[in-house]
Length: 292
Image (cartoon, rainbow, N blue to C red; front, side, top):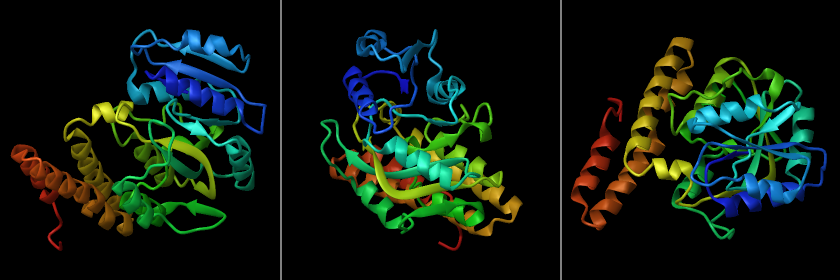
C-alpha cells in the first residue's frame, strides 16, 4: 500500500481490506516520506497482518511501487492505492482468476468509480474509455500485438486493480523515467516479453477520482500530455521493429491523448485562457500522421 498523504483515505482503504471475505492476507503500508506520517494510524488498527515502513527519502511513484513489491513475500501481490477501496470480494476474485490462468503475469478486475466522498462518479474521459474497453463477460486475455494495440488505443485496465504473480516479475517492473505512464509501460513490457494479462468482468475495486491524488498534483501543466505523446511515439517505433503493425498504427495516432488536448483547449478558451488554449491545441495537432 504505497502512501504519501491523505490519512482519511488510508483509514478507509485499510478498513475495506479488513472486510475481505478472505482473511489470510498481509499488508505493508510503504510511506514515501510524505508530509503526513501514517505510522500512528496503522498502529491504531492493532492488526498483526498490517505492517508499516517509512522511506528515509522520497522515492517517487516508480521507486516506491518497486519497493512495495520488493517487500512482498506472498504468491500474489497487489499495489493497493491508499486512496482507493476494495470490494469485500476483491481478494477471493483475484486469487480465483489467477488460479484459472496459472501462466498469467497479472490479473485485473472492473471498478466502481468514486469521488472524494465515496460517491459514484464518472468523468467524460471515463465514458470515452468505456466505449473503447473490450466487451467481455467472464475472463479476457490481453496478449501480443492486438493486446498492446487495445491498451494504446485507451489504457482501459485500471492499474491499481492488478494482482501480480510475484515470481514472474522483474525486480523493478516500474521505470522511474516515467511519471504518468509507468503502469502502461509495465504492461507494455509484459506483453512485449510474451507474457499474458488476464481480466475478469467482475467488479471488485473502488477507484477514487479526486484532485489531490499524487498523479493529480503532478498533472498541473501539460507534462502529462507531453509524456503520453512521447510514450506513444516511442511505442510506435518499438512496435515497428517487432513487426507489430496494429500497435504501431494505433500508438502513432494517440487519438485519446489528442482528444483530451482538444477538450482542454476548448475549456481554456471558454475561460479566456488564450495561452493555455493555444498550448493544448498546438500539442493536439503536433506529429499527426500524414494520413490524418
